[in-house]
Length: 263
Image (spheres, rainbow, N blue to C red):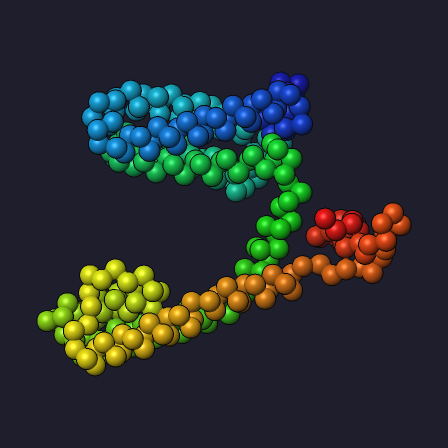
C-alpha cells in the first residue's frame, strides 16, 4: 500500500489518532445536518420558501459523502470486502437517494437512511466493549427465530379465521366489506391498537371482538418471553475463579476473551 493510501486509511478507518477522530466527528456532524435538512424540506412552509437552498445544501453534502465513499474504496485494504460490509452498504445507500431524487422527485427523502452511519460513534467513543451485550441480543434473536416463526404463523392463522368469521357475522353494513379488511380489523384488535375505524355492531360480533381482545392480551408478551429466555441462555456462566483482590467470583467475558471481574 502506498504512503498516500496508508495515510488516507489511517484518517478514515482509524479513530485512535487525532486526525481520525476529528474526521469521524466531522462526518457525524454532516450526517446529522443532512438528516435535519431532509426533515425540514418535508415541511410545506419551509419547502416553499427555502426548498432550493435546502436542495443545494443536500447536494453539496451528498457530494462530500460521495467523495468520502470513493476514498474509502481507494484506501481500503480489501475494497470489495468493505463494499459488502454493513457500513459499506449503508455508506452507499446514504448517497443513492439524493441522486435518484434528481430523476424521481420525492426519493431524496429516503436519504434519512444515512442516520444509520451515526452508529460509528461506538467506535469513536471507544464503546465497542459494550457491543457484547448487543451480541447477546443478536444471538438470542437467532436462536429464537424458529419459535417466533411458529408463533407468528399461529397468530396469522387466528386473525385469518377471526377476520373471515367477522365478515360473515357483520357484513358490509358494519364496515366489514371484505375478508382482507376484516383481517385488518382483527390484527388491529388483537394488537390492542384499536383505531376505531371499523367496529362490530351486532351482539355476536361484539362477543367475538371481546374474545379476540382477551386473546391479544394473552399473546402479546409471548415473543418477549421467548427472546428473554434465549438471552438468559446466551449469557456466559461464572467460571468459579475468585479475584485475589476483592474475593469476588470472576466471569468470563463474552466470546472467550478471558476472565474479568463483574461490573
